[in-house]
Image 1 (cartoon, helix red, strand yellow):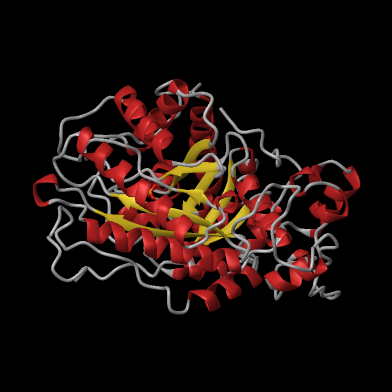
Image 2 (cartoon, rainbow, N blue to C red):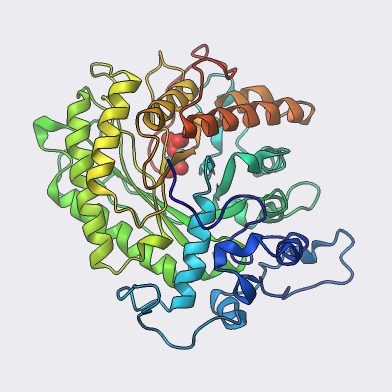
Length: 467
Ligand code: 13P
């Protein structure tokens, strides 16, 4: 089901995102660098801020204070000039140099490693309310709890077997846990790539004059473009190698939602974000989420999703986005929350049909969000089963078809943890089990019910709105 990815899991990490010790072993092994094209070009830069007095050897945190331009300047293979490359056959997106493209592609390929997905842990108010569980909602939403919980998540042994990238909230990117460990160091040391959520959410006042949709407010677009360039630079210097931006669209066929105006704003806002990220060395996750709220059937979602993705890739082209260095995070094609329920097989067929019609093969990976689910559904199992059905139906897609789940990765984990470090090990096992289930679903080999979950007991409304 996968493109012959240049970067095949073990030994590979995105440019300068890995601890120095791992970087050394990659170079000396002489093979892990295939993702960069081999040879000197594969080497990671020297540490920029080695602290010889650091008792824990944190000098491995090579990300600190290194900008993307510094990284490129150090790459021995970095060509000086912008321009087309006859060898690659790539004559467009020439505003990025071949070296910049190579770095972005290496990261995007590593993110899209076979059977790996993302852990979306960038919830603004902590994951407790998003999870949609009566017990999870009792965990205190403090900075200390968020740090303790996420530090536990990121240190889950062997998590990198199933997770390539971890999406962080801005707070977490600069946060240390109680033991003084920077979160980005924990993620790198555990073999995963840190990424950063960069949208600043939306105002529910929305786009003037647009209809109020099933979310109870007009259509929206996201804030955050004005200072995005500076925030990208900061995030890169702190270790982020990819980014996320989620725009929200609503379905209401009777009112013509999503409207052409909202789609135009959504996809151009995302495309502008994408190229600003790429200019700064961050691989953009492009997320035009059409939320499932409403009573529509699956066909309405299919129509809207196809229309939005056609517009999205046209906008990415118009803005000059380098597709090989970007990934897509779409909704699956599903029925509305209160609409007639579609089976996983119907969801798979509609989703694959839409993706095949809209997503260029130049893009290495497609990573679904899990999305809001009905109260009588087990959101974790639903998300795994649907992804499984998709990959079972279409085992030979040109992209990695994988997961970037937040709620559906963490509900059982949070309920197992409940703010008590004594539960760390059990919570890590829950996270690992669901991550493995989703990885199996990337192969279409997951057996329904094989992964333990808290199920539907205790389900409450999942917090909606800006992530
Ligand atoms: P879900 O919680 O719906 O999986 O969404 C994850 C995410 O990152 C949304 O942007």
